[in-house]
Length: 455
Image (cartoon, rainbow, N blue to C red):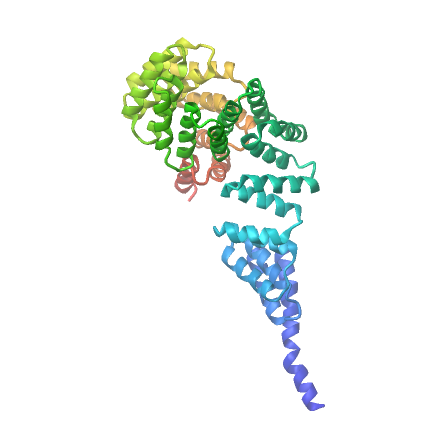
């Protein structure tokens, strides 16, 4: 009896402490203290070995605290004890992805199937990895479980645009019907695909699909579309040029592609213009100027080559020549929003004749492209530079209203409020700009301003 009592005294504190840990973990989680919750769950799991599923909870809470390393460690402990659920595999996949281990993340998500979120995570990661056919299969499986998921329809439609354009429209239209936020990009894709289908030339269909995907910033899918165009017709010079440009955007070498394009058709204005863009990205504006000049001679009625020349001259620091080319572009095509956008951006970015050229160009741009957030962002910047803070505030708010996810107008509105002395509002918009563009120039500038004015 004495021995029995001694054993109780020795062993009871451990499960009692484990129970207290478990209660603390749940309390911390309810308060949003994920670090405390994760540590408490891990402590409870050690003290209550007959409850190995607690390691999974510890891993989930660690990930919510952005503690990726501990999250993976706790999940591995759950796996070693055979106590991980499908939901746990799903979360572990996210942790592995954040750690940069996409291969292991994919394996984890496969073990989380048939959870619909696992199919979606697989599809998104396989797209990044370049396995587009498998990504399509996973989006289709996801939609079997979530037929009203607008984003899934949209992502599937984008993939099909690059691989099988004729099948893309139904998915894109469904996304647009389910969520109005997809209406604008879907309309762009729909218009392009309708133009592409006027031709029976499959190579041309892929080329147009790729150009539209590129305009939407989907350069990986655009590159796939151009690759498919070249599979259909290996002697398609424009597809080679676009392929070179898309590779450059993906951090790859597109030089050989442009060599092929120029070899096949050295006198095509479109290819010379794309080559000019390529050279600019390589930091060779002088060579780009030569390419744009040749394109402008071949197609003197196309303002795009004048805009390209303006960009290249601006890159060399020759602002006088740049201004002249932008002005020629708006005179040549007074109803072309791109020309007015280029002139307004040049004036604002270089603080050149903002009152004479910049603000009037931005106002014309708003007239021609009233649904584009960039139009109001440029008008807001111009008004700010002219010290009209009230007008700038209104224009920039309209820009944010048109696209609430853009960092640039949030940054510019933060600057307006800083200059006006409205510090709480300035802080809020600078935080937004930093969040929307964490690794880009707008986010960097917002962070510097936050450090300077809100240390």
